[in-house]
Amino acid sequence: MNVIVSNQSSKDLTALDIDVIKSVTGEYSVDELISMFKTFFYEKIIIDVTAIKEYRNTNNVERLAMGLGAEKIILLLTDELCSSNYLSALIDVGLYNFTNNINAIKRLIAKPNTYDDVKQLQELNASSNETSDSSSHYSSIKKVIGFQNITKSAGATTLIYMLFKELKKYYNNGVYALELNKKDFSYFNSKDMISISEGELESKLDQLSNANVVLVDLNGSKKDSLCSETIYLLEPSTIKLNQLIRNNQNVFEKLKGKKVVLNKSMLSNKDVTEFEYEANSKMFYNIPSLNDREKNSVLNDFLSRLGIYDETNRDSEDGNKLFGIFRH
Image 1 (cartoon, helix red, strand yellow):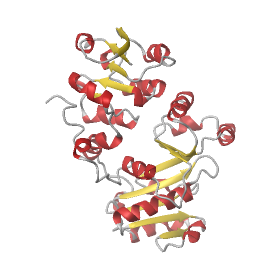
Image 2 (tube, one colour):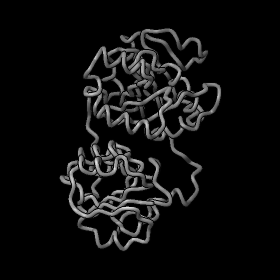
Image 3 (cartoon, one colour):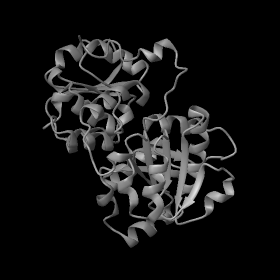
């Protein structure tokens, strides 16, 4: 059963042929909506965006996604909000089910979007906002991705090794992993996994200028400015989180807007949603404990979310999932 929260589109939403357990009409603050539905059981909540006070501010939509769970929300947008910037902001917080077409809502209930179905909207926004920066001379490297442990021993080294193996299958050549100020990579017995000092990073990236992807284990160094983006790894066990917060009470405030990934995580989707609400911070991805001797499909999805891996075997129905989501 589903919930409908409507305002300007109340007539159209009322006419939808879907199972509804509760329907409310009006304009509500984010806190009011979270209080109203946080403990209410439902499958999907269809929200007319005009029912959210100050809905043009994407921070409010982000708070709503954190409070109710992005995977449960289907957002009915106004035509004016279907800009690349607004849609990209929705995708950034894990909201993949949005449309300005009332007729698309039933399909989104039956078969919700994944990141793969909407990532082209985010990539389009990224390409339209490209600017030169201090790392522009590495532009021939398609991606330089840094990994930084936030909790102690959050698993950056092993995760990079597993991602490296998956990318090697996808690209064949042009994939490298660099480790700063340690020698742990030597145990993986690969010539393309290289241990260097942090002072050597810039010159090594120059040498690898034709690479497709370079993964960098930053090991606490301040060289993240040389990376296209940085992933911050957090092991969400009780003891690791308590240690983290005791050492730095403002850590989640400092991480706001960054790509924080839960690694070696035992949390369910519901647990993650509650954790995000308590920390007032959005998690970019939730990676469970993995066997590094096996193929792990979750890594393909994670790499796809980072924009460096494409699912090429999707059937035509999935490949065309965005068709009809927006009115033309």
